[in-house]
Length: 167
Image (cartoon, rainbow, N blue to C red):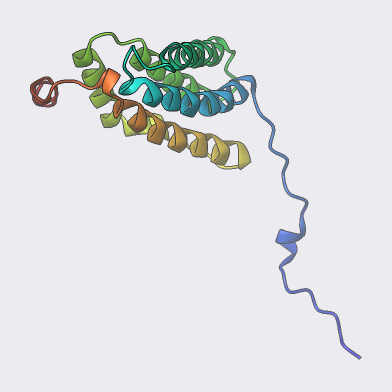
C-alpha cells in the first residue's frame, strides 16, 4: 500500500484569488485589442495607390478602426478610477490618444520620446492579481506604442528626430 503525502505546502492549497476588472482596466483591455487592428489597417494602406481597386475599402477600414480606437481610448480616459493602477492605465491611454491625434511628425516624435523616457508610466507598484494584470497590460501597451511609431504616417524626417533627441 502506498501512503499519501501532500507535496505542496499548506499556503499553496488556498483557492486562487479571483481577478476582477475595474471599469478602467476593462476599457483598457479593449484598447489593447483595438490598437493592433488599427496598426494592421494603417499598414495595409501605407503603400497603397489611389488607383488600386482596394483603395476605398482599405481606407474605409482604416478610418473605422481609428474611430473605434479613439472611442475606446476616450472610454478609458473618461472612466472613474478606483485604484493607482487605474491612474497608470488612464495616463497611458491619454498618451496613446495624443500620439494618434498628432498631425505633425515632429510633435509625434517629441511626444514619443517623452513617453519613452517616462518608464514609470508603464509600471504600477503593489501586489496581487490586479496589479500583475495592470502591469502586463502596460507592458503590452508600450510594445504597441513602439509599433505605432514605426508607421510611416507618424514617421518624422531624420533631421526632425535628431532635433527632438537633442532638445
